[in-house]
Image 1 (cartoon, rainbow, N blue to C red):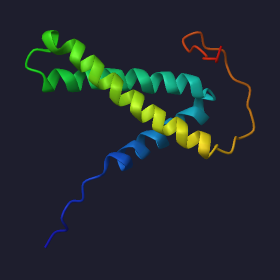
Image 2 (image 1 turned 135 degrees about the vertical axis):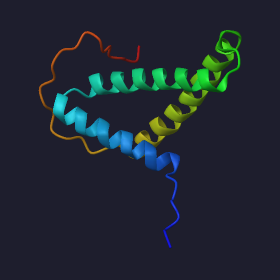
Image 3 (image 1 turned 90 degrees about the vertical axis):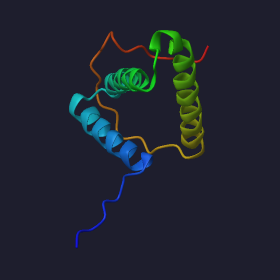
Image 4 (image 1 turned 60 degrees about the vertical axis):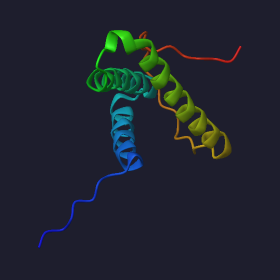
Length: 108
């Protein structure tokens, strides 16, 4: 008898992406570059997801954009609040390579 396959949860899958991002951040020594790449990859995959789920993506594009944006904003807000309540222990700073493709954000 074979064991039933256990499906991964959304959080387990996310943890795998985060582990890869952490590995790439150490390899590249540039967390901003990896974050930008993850956002691009997410946008690209979500556009693909929308194209498969939509019968008329051109007509539903604005709705898809709003839905995915709202989902991301809610997830980001929750995680920002978690990091405010539980700040990560910072590793010693390494010299970062300048990357013009990554923009820094600052509060005004």
